[in-house]
Image (cartoon, rainbow, N blue to C red; front, side):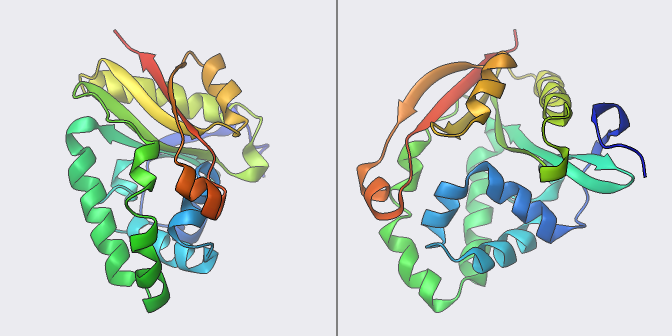
Length: 211
């Protein structure tokens, strides 16, 4: 088996395979928010997010992702899309989540669903939104995140977008990575209710100007 690093990684359009791993990679990008949304039911998160990964639409669908492949296996993902798809794809994702949720999750969602969106400012009309960027734990620190992010910049430019936006928890070490890759801190948002109930930290909107 070849050594896993940026030179041995192939970037390709993601497929619907490896849904459990894809869901775990997605979880690693925003565990605080997902624990709040799913009331710390990790198995429910895996089941529902893995299902959404396999669909042909929605904010968690593989159709919006680029895969980093090592020996044909998933080593990382970068999932994002232009702002013009933002509302539609999140709506599709929430419908799919509600359809797959059990009674306990259905009962929990109203207590947090109206608060989580305040963490995430509006995305400008001419922007591309990077929802998830994550590398396999065994692949971290080997340049794979950089390769995926540079590819995101190119995807955004090809889509005619003037900037790339993303949100990241203020306690996430990835903040330093994003700043090193040319993104700037734009605004920090905190929601006291879910900070108290589920320990959700403030989140920082970061932006990379592409033109």
